[in-house]
Image (cartoon, rainbow, N blue to C red; front, side, top):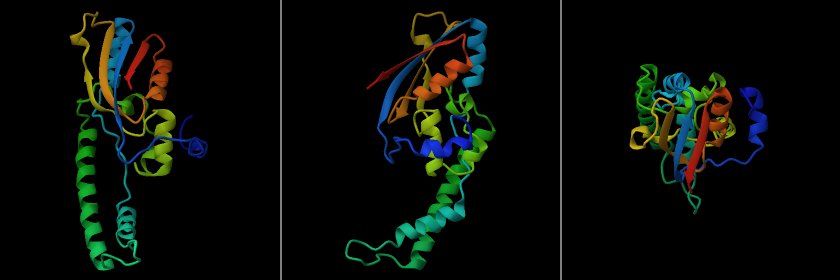
Length: 201
């Protein structure tokens, strides 16, 4: 599956996209020729951030609608004016957090040794939808196998007695499920490398 043309197909599949996901520990071993391992390390290293493009006006409207929903007794607990004010403050928090993330991304701060967006990049047409769009979650599930960026990614090769020129070992935490689909794409893109993923379920 590639691009926006497969969004409709992806939406028909069941995905794991929980608001509070379970984080699962994984270890990934990559083995191959020394020159290819070097090129892979360079290609895989990135800021560890997906540069989503959020519609802040739509976000504000959505927050207002959530805030003014009646409670179980059918009454509102906040006025529309107060809801708009609170939604505006939340919007500003989202904007500052996003700008900080984008600043890291566009400066390409190389702090993540296994950046899925570098290896299996989210296309522009999906980035424009934002991270909370159903189509975005479907794309991530269909292409990565997880709907969140990997967390606590480390290159732990030096902890093992292996040839560091031909082997790299990473560990990371993945949301709700293993990034099998991303690993399959990486294996197809780098056919001279062997990838072994070891999840700890």
